[in-house]
Image 1: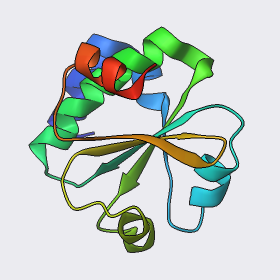
Image 2: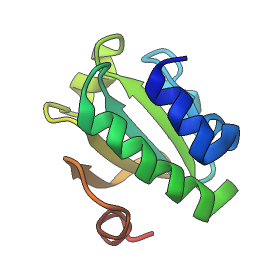
Image 3: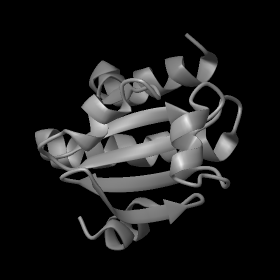
Image 4: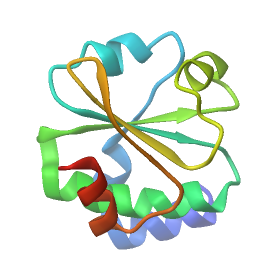
Length: 121
């Protein structure tokens, strides 16, 4: 584990780390578009500090909403198709899907309250 992941686990526990599913271009349809609950897709990149900081906020949201929402991570370096399809150029980018449809989008680092308001959760 990286130092950040170890620190994160110490303060948030392993439940925080298991709330996120890493999806790929090939699995995006199953993990996101065909999901029967809202899905928040976090487009991120290794080494991007805003993406790492946003994971803390997403951990809080996962704790609040539990099984009412699914959070997935999409690494833009290894998943260029979905990154292109959804026009992700700024990091971090969050896209909320409901019933397979894009319903909200947030770009940049935001705090929990701002994110919840923008996503209308």
